[in-house]
Image (cartoon, rainbow over all chains, first blue to last red; front, top):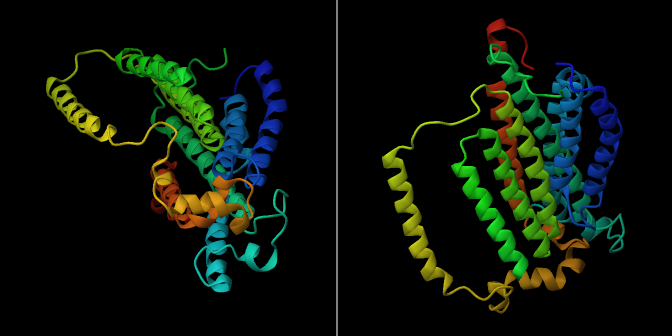
Length: 158
Length: 183
């Protein structure tokens, strides 16, 4: 219930920031380097999974509450759909890269380039990260409730 | 070329162990070994995008599976397999294998994509003009979020529906019975 030993907690406290930053980097630079929204989102979710494994479920749930994760998930999906609809309105067809073609051509191999592709990457990263965290959190809650007669935390930490 | 055969052998051995072992935890770990072998193979095939995604999803899935395995009392499988199920599985695999042998003869050689044989194929246009049409230096991002963005929208919708279903089934208790507001 209260997570693992003090060694694991200390190391996880340092490493979680690096994992989170790496996930943000993978999402933001998805149009320049290998990676992208999906892989970056899974890395973001795994930083919270590390938090949950090391400090216990309550700590992770306090850090990112369930309704908040749900809202982030919906915000990512909405942003992605909005990009598509704006492409329809401004560019004339669904999912056209309107930012690149009309407003912000940018310069190739720079961070601000490729129009709406970085925005789509951010939307997908937000969506995938929040939703995977939601799945793992609800799986762990489900195990706590239905399997109360079985030792759930067996073999952890010690 | 040698490294691919070595990785393939490693993955096949791990898959056989995963099927044959009676301990559930070692079976899960062997499934993870198959996934890591696949990600290494993607890396050697120079597809870093897929390699990153594969290794990240593999780690997360392995964590979920190991936690689900550890928290159960029954961690080993005993008893014989059903005779009928084995016969049906072997028959289906044999049919696929025989059909596959005929198809494999017509495939182009290793490293020669089939779209390179067709002139004016869409993939050749993506490779030749992807940078100037989308402005993305990473061509994979350019394809999945610009040329084929509709595909990505469908994938995102599938994921969204899965999450809704999972949280609806696995949530703590129904709010409707209590009469509270919808969360």
